[in-house]
Image 1 (spheres, rainbow, N blue to C red):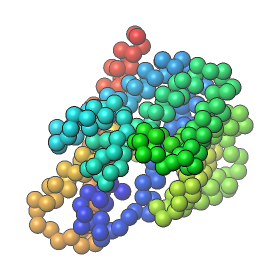
Image 2 (tube, helix red, strand yellow; image 1 turned 90 degrees about the vertical axis):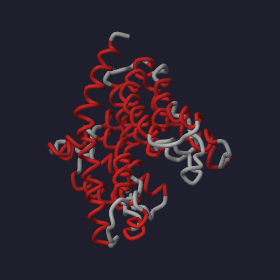
Image 3 (cartoon, rainbow, N blue to C red; image 1 turned 60 degrees about the horizontal axis):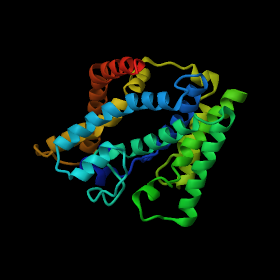
Image 4 (cartoon, one colour; image 1 turned 180 degrees about the horizontal axis):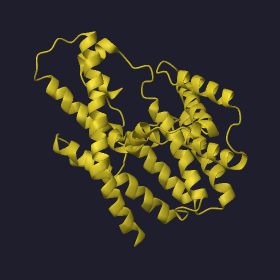
Length: 306
């Protein structure tokens, strides 16, 4: 989606992609699922250890991408501080939305908030952790629905219905660990098809959220979970690097495209879009291999000594 909008003339020709920004919805459901799954196995079961591992995994590479963005632009000290500290604020640069300096980092503001809440829940009784936290997040969303919209950035941001996707992922993991995966392959495939259709940008937020939940739930079927692809595995491993650095890559490509005279047509727009995606994937894979992987490995070794 971001590749379409990096050049306004391309965006006007190609329009909004079918899936819009709904990949984020799937990501949030997966995030809630994984946090429950890894802590159920005894990994990072204490609040402090859990937070330390999440910080090591998320923060350093994000800060590196933020630093590159800061160097390439002009920002206030408040914008820089809030972006580095995962504090939502109204950005006048991006239509008044609640975006950090690196716009795609808005999802990490939600992630870090969820990690903090989840870490606190680990101090409670095991059987109550998931339902209690899911209920708390649902209450916040209901408060935003019936008492909002709130004028404050924090209250507005953290009462978003997107919190329900984390809660849904957590509850899905709880059901999966208790009752197992879906048993009917036909139903699972039908759920994925319906889920993909529901992710369409033209659909309402509840429909998109339901589609994200259906896709993740259906993917738990043993036959689907057993599918393997080396190419997709490589992209999955590098997904965080791709996610963080693709806006920087595409902004650079958009700037470069203005240095040349080219006729913007539907055909050249598709060529540009394909090139932007390919370059973003390539740079993400390189970043994962030579920056993210070595950095995280060293930091995890250091964290084990703390």
